[in-house]
Image (cartoon, rainbow, N blue to C red; front, side, top):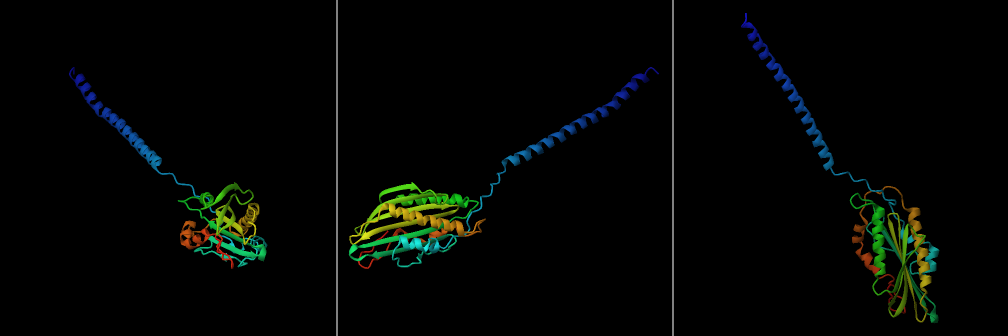
Length: 282
């Protein structure tokens, strides 16, 4: 009887051991599950942080079309600025896509006999830019081209007394560049207005010279005529070009590549052959 008490104590002690092990095991399993959840959460957070953010969609282009360049300036304005124009309706420039690029020009020699002759050249060109997710909005692309065109006009070869000034009231922004150029032994007065309205850039050039003793037109008159015509051309874009998101179309840059011959003509601004004079180039 005295030996049974210690034996009973050893049995009870042994029976308690599995219970403790089970408790420890449960505690360990609980900790492992928590660590797994933490690792999964950490991995998810890391993946989220490493993902590249989605770029916001570019603003849709305001204009999806261009007006007819040869009708963008009123007939009376053309008649006033280019008396005796060879082609009253103008000469359209070549373009692979008139919804992206268009141009037109007029030139004429007003022969006044012994009083000499007055030569005038007028040209207008439109370039439209679509919005592109990789290139930017049409307005931003047009602004970039506008800046380039202004710089190009300022650097015109042979230009004398070149000056540039803002031309308020024409589109969203506009700059007028004026200068003198001596060609065919005559003094030409030039004025070019580069303007931007939305995603369209308008470049209008007007110049003139006096022949056979006639006076050279005043710089003020040439500038005034250029600004008037440019305002009409920009107004035509605003009035007739369709607004809204542009459909996919060739970029203005591609159109320019296709129109190299047209650009060469533009560089000669004012080529005309008066019947009794050498060909003036403007």
